[in-house]
Length: 120
Image (cartoon, rainbow, N blue to C red; front, side):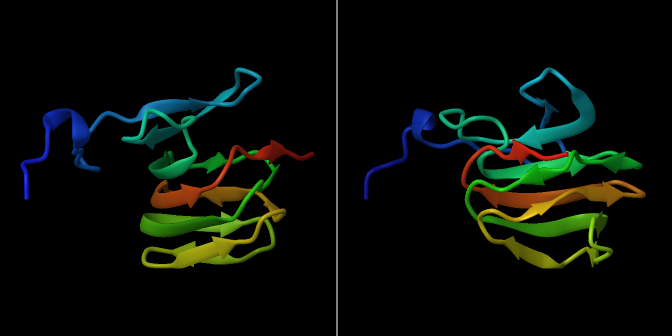
């Protein structure tokens, strides 16, 4: 096997790496942030680590493709009343609509196929 070229591998530690603020298409930023190594994809799509600060509520949105996530730290309250905790792995089917709230902040490993569509 040949060695891996430096330009073909990226490594980041979720506890020490810099996260990029997530900004919605209309320019609104709510304090959430993303760590994503694949810069060929739109920020917040594909595989990434997503951080929500304490007290944050995401905007209501519809998924354009399936979403899967694993809660690495914290707790997430879903709009239907479901409470997700560290270690919970979640799958949302394409077309699902929801929003999420975290009382004390949370960290998630996420895979999402495409940007979400806002819903009111």
